[in-house]
Image (cartoon, rainbow, N blue to C red):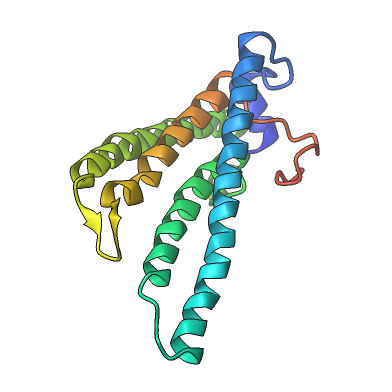
Length: 188
C-alpha cells in the first residue's frame, strides 16, 4: 500500500501519534524488534548447524541425527516470525498491478479490504495455530524427546498474533513511519 493510499485511508495519524497512540506505536516497535532478533538468532543458528551436519556426515563419516530437524524447526520460526515483520514494514512480496490501475478512491477501499483480509488470516493462524499447538503439546519430537511438538508449531499462532496487532496498528494509527530512521524500511 503506497504512502498516499495509507494516509488517505487513515489520515495523517501516523505522523501525529500522541498519548495512547504513541505508547501503542512503541509497543509495536518493540514487538517488531523482538521478532527481528528472534529471526536473526534462528538464522545464525541455522548457519552454524547446517555446516556441522555436513562436517559430521562427510568428514567424520558419522552423520549426527539432530542438525537437520533442528534446522527445520528454526526455519519455521524464521519463516513465520519474519513474515509478520515483513508484513508490518510492507517489505513482503505483493502484487499491486491491479490496485495501481484503480482510481484513488477505489485504491483506498481495496487497501482497507486487504487489511481486513489480512486480519482474517491472522485470526485464522492465531486460533487454529493455537489449537494445533494445544493438540500436539503432549507429543515429542523423535530426535529431541524432551521437546514438545507443540513448541515447534508455536511460531504459527505467535506470528498470527503479531500480524493481527500490526493490522490494528495500521488501521488505527497508521503504518510505521518511513523517515529513514529504520534501515530495514525502504524509502518510497
